[in-house]
Image (cartoon, rainbow, N blue to C red):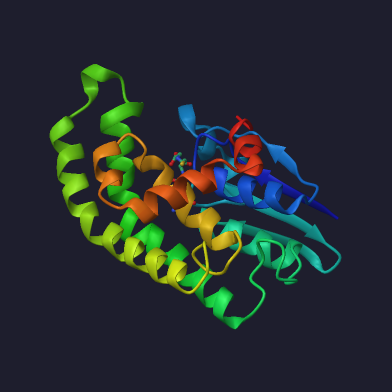
Length: 216
Ligand SMILES: N[C@@H](CCC(=O)N[C@@H](CS)C(=O)NCC(=O)O)C(=O)O
């Protein structure tokens, strides 16, 4: 039985890579890039017809399981390769499962597009191609979902839970922090939500994050 993760860490493949490293499960990284049409070859399209990384391919006794969509990949790894023992990143009960699902869907629908605009136009693109006005508009829109996250983290803290789904780091944090990480160039925006900022710092200081980040 082998678990393969296609993709490099400087992409959405960071999400399943981070989840797998957190769990300490053996896996093989196939460092497919997204550049130069590499995900548009017939071989790659047979894995993911959308032509994107990441893809997870899990050879199991019952047959091959192929997963694409980065959040689904991370949630799958946590569910299938982790133990729901209340110690790992795997949700340990229905509430934690619901939190992992809702915050992961929330991150891709409410946060990801504008967070990517911030990353690209504040940091990632060559300076001469950046359009700061696009980043400004994205930051302005992001105040709304970030206020939701801020309020949730404050409520979690008030009930003695330091993370999104529990009083331990779970796959919910992997999924949301991997998107919120793109907001690091928006220091002013993050300063307006201190609970989000503090939680993100703790998530990004994890050894597993730093290991996964090097898988380029
Ligand atoms: N919604 C997808 C998006 C995946 C995606 O856009 N991946 C990018 C890299 S981060 C990619 O493969 N781009 C190459 C291409 O589209 O040709 C997911 O979350 O997995």
